[in-house]
Image (cartoon, rainbow, N blue to C red; front, side, top):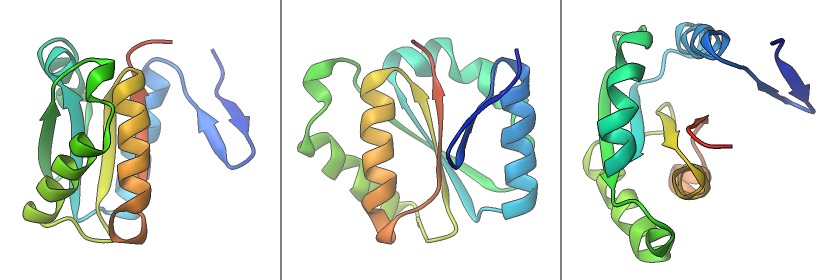
Length: 126
């Protein structure tokens, strides 16, 4: 399936997505890559993702519990704290690997930390 571009954003499918992520990483050279997962995507998706990412940047994983009840400001505060403790800066990248809770929270968190850092969604549901 061909990528779909909507305004300034492109949606890639299957392995084209990994190629696009790696191209972005090569071009932008993020200082640190943060991967936001929940306990289910950590177990089932993260092992598949990691061999596909080509980078020498430090990769840090931030794991939250799964479920709609964790889509709240307390979870955001915990992730913000983890990002600060792990050295997030304006040149960091956040990859949100998961369903609606992860992509909703991850996009919000990335857009509000350090006046906003780039983020990539890798949805595991549709």
